[in-house]
Image (cartoon, rainbow, N blue to C red; front, side, top):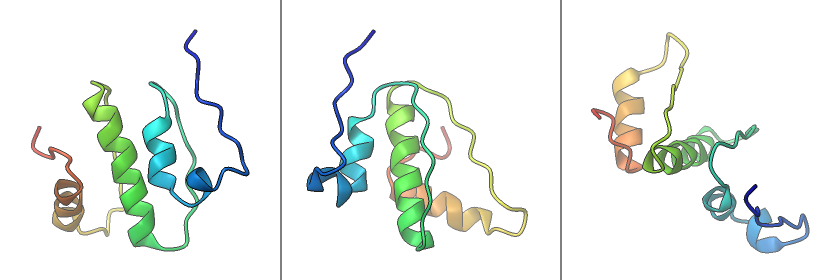
Length: 85
């Protein structure tokens, strides 16, 4: 069993920087994300997806049928995700 980093809820570096927290997560973890600002939420989602893909993991990203698919693909590409791959 891997030693996971201990996350202290009072550690401001994790509380104020969700991307730093995401980068510390070991393989095959799941998270639940609640957000108020869609742009920030997508940034965090795409970072989580990118980290997993770089580790050779698989991903399924679902969206509502009324969403603008090219816009989402463009945002993913801008986040460093190989959408075509």
